[in-house]
Length: 486
Image (cartoon, rainbow, N blue to C red; front, side, top):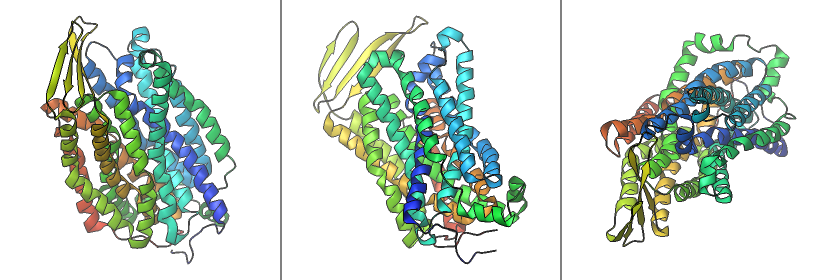
């Protein structure tokens, strides 16, 4: 049954309080989730056998991916709770679970101390993070949407979309700040634990912000009328029409959005630092600047979707990613590896080559614990080249903002209030967790398997192409519609 008026609060001040409280907690959860990915190269040396660095790094990415695989299970558990006991209380629980797991990572003994227990404990905590994130996004998106006016839902829910980029940005700033303060060697030795430990303080802060929030008006209305479902999971799947909507949302929008998002945020880092061997701090700085510059476009495209429609904006982002991801990464490779060597200095420890464009390539000989020698390559780029790298990353993230900005409003508008939290969370977290979240691992594995720098791009290009085709055929416009009450 369609309601004549969508439940919303008329007070603009109150609406902004809702957005701030929801976003603050979600930023912290994304920060918690992303510092693991940003520190993957260091974590691989601490919690996995050191004899094979490549295998250790892939194992770290697999552990990173396990958190994403756990997200659908979190969506089932917390989606059910959100539709039964309320949006507010459910994402207070997810906040505490995420923060506690992240805080605990700071205190795990290394592989050298406790052996195989180290990666096992790390994996368990990463799975708990994934469970928490699986419940968080659906709650925050639903909560804000159920407070928003029909004709501005894209705009207001897009602030929730910015939280992932802001969390990612904060994670990089904290990491770089710790690295600068402590020095590279100290940071690599034990300082990498500090960004995880900081989570404890941030979670307590966010808890006090969130605990005074009211329940959403749509859920409160259902509760007063006695229409709250006791079996949201069963209700979500017993309706063929609802299952069809979940499948359309997943394959027509979310798997592509997840692929371009995680490729532009995480695989871009891996490609620049591990494949192109750009010096870590400058690469992280470039990523932080690119993501910061792109973040306002979540709101811009969310607002635009209120005017011209969700479908047009999302499909444009997916098409752009499908067509331009490969050329963008070719451009990154060309920017870093072009140029002519001006001079080369050779010492017993390293070989340093200076290029005509100001680039420096250092190859250091490192002895591994198994007695073998590995050549560690690091490239320091001049400012002009860093700008080009940053611009190419920015364009990737821009496509992600187009696909991602309107998606919360689109998903909320698809499903009825009674089972909205569950119906939204499951396809979102299956698609984003399993398909999109595993993009960095699959892409890195494909590159390692084939020996090609660019083989990893075929996976996200395939997913964005599938979403574009399915979305163009099956997605119907939802912008401006009333929220269904049942």
